[in-house]
Image (tube, rainbow, N blue to C red):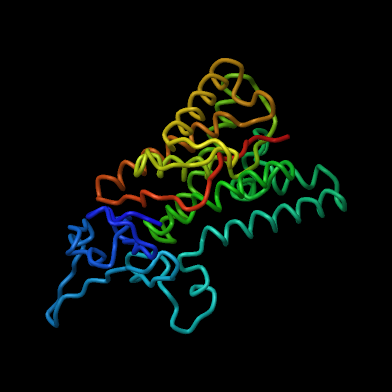
Length: 297
């Protein structure tokens, strides 16, 4: 059951506005029935105006115009049609394929080749491919599982609001900046430290966006402990700040400073989206978990 954001009626099959993020009954599902901020995006032409309502029931797929979805649907099918509104799952697959490749390279070529391909190392910043490959590589099975869980639950909520192209830019951009920031901060404060790998910076950016758009979104920490999202985010921020500036940015083999930078990027982007009238649903059907640790184990 879900509650209509306008009249409060409980409905079994709610409609979700993919422009403002609200949840509505059938009577208030149309944008003009709930004063949708997306109405400001109405575009007209000599032949008449057009407004893509972007609505669907909670269990169905929706289509979005190419200008709002980022990657437009490809009428011929193919790769573009697949990644349309599915970049979260594309990134998940890439993470697990990269993890499998890590295991293969380590067993056949050894740790030196593995690190040259997958680890963002302070002594090899010129190996620019590792700026990206380090986002998808992980330091162990627990590391990738926890990051995958967080991305699986939180990623679609953001992607459906900002479009696949913007979501991909956020994920990759935050991952690269967070990794580089951690390595440089480590060099300035503690000297040459271990390399960085993992999607935690990107995942924390997604979490930051959600925190701004809907701080009271209910999540389940470890699938057991219910709490509003802002509490979880505040806890991550506090831990990252205390350890980064107290013990050291990479204490315990965790890239705490990368966590902090990724989170700050997400908070900033979320504030920009909020000013544009974007928000997320008030109900979260499935329990989410925190982003996994970054750094190298």
